Image 1: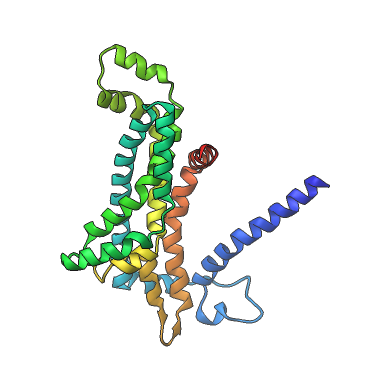
Image 2 (image 1 turned 135 degrees about the vertical axis):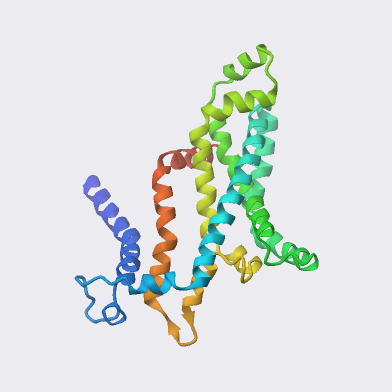
Length: 269
């Protein structure tokens, strides 16, 4: 009985998760008439006209490249800084490390609104609004606590004997970090990087406040299909599919290590 209940719950969960995804992709391949036909059409002739409209939209194409530049640059900075800090924390004694971890965790759960308004004010005073580097810096700052907390779990799995042996051989701390920890934890570092990309790619609120016409990212750009004349459901779902697709592929590539790192982090936290 318990097994049957488990499978029923699993099926319901899969339907709740996968049906919205199916609806978005299917609607993106329908004409306007097929998309709103009643009863709904489950079998239809696919069309690419919605994707053609999206690719002919210059603002959307620019937003796509902005998202790529901002997401990857901010994540690279976050992981680089996070790896160095995580290594320093792992090398500390246990009470000091736990105390510092709590401080980092408090930064991680702080709402973005705390620093978005001051950042906007400073950027406006310095005439740096609509600037890629400001947005990259903000996203890097947001992701660094998360990168640290995740990388700690991977660095702690590395035997301390490796670090002790390297110190006996005369290696300095940065050499140990670069030559010992980085190669051993490379899978975890890549998983952390991809997870930071996922968070930055999908983030909306910070992008809405700080980006302008030249730096607009995909989550903000996609709202351009919500017009005063109504919602353009076909191009909107096609754009949503294009936004989701790269992140779904990246997420599937590293799902094992991401789940492992996040579960270990939650247990230790």
